[in-house]
Length: 109
Image (tube, rainbow, N blue to C red; front, side, top):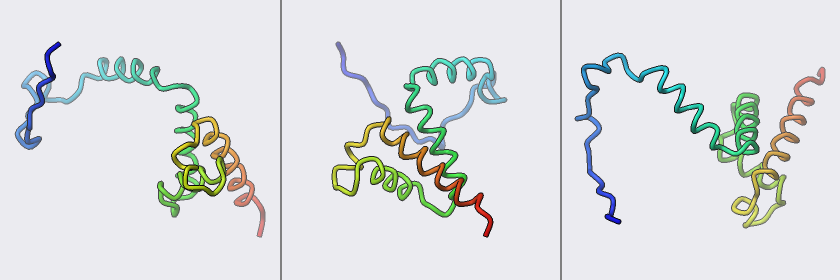
């Protein structure tokens, strides 16, 4: 097996071919999205969706803070919590956080 060849390319020199001046082929792009999106495990896809909801609900919280908070909810306050948290644990923590935040914002003041 031959080693892969990597080229150092300046992105500023890349150009679309004349046949593709309008950008990506929408049908091909849709096929690729369907193909590769199916490769993401269901739990991870659901976790990403809940993370998107949390991010929208809490725009002042940076993404790194959000992930760190979720790992602390999932695994407790430990140095290994962020590294060792499983997707299922993060999903449960994200759902809990979203439910708490939704409940807090729904309460009348």
